[in-house]
Image (tube, rainbow, N blue to C red; front, side, top):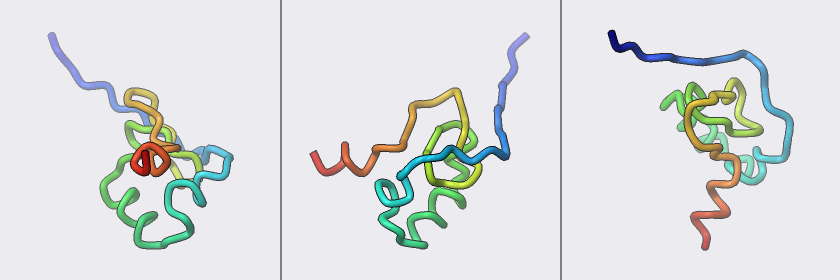
Length: 66
């Protein structure tokens, strides 16, 4: 039997990612929330983004700049 485990939480991860990930841009925050990225990914500074089954996206903007 196969199944899918979805993990979510209402906890907000503390940190400075709102400046790292979105640079304070409400459109970036809205995109992460609309895509429900936080259901699987941790993204500090994004409300409810505390998933545990996918890579941490907290520093994704740093990686994209490299």
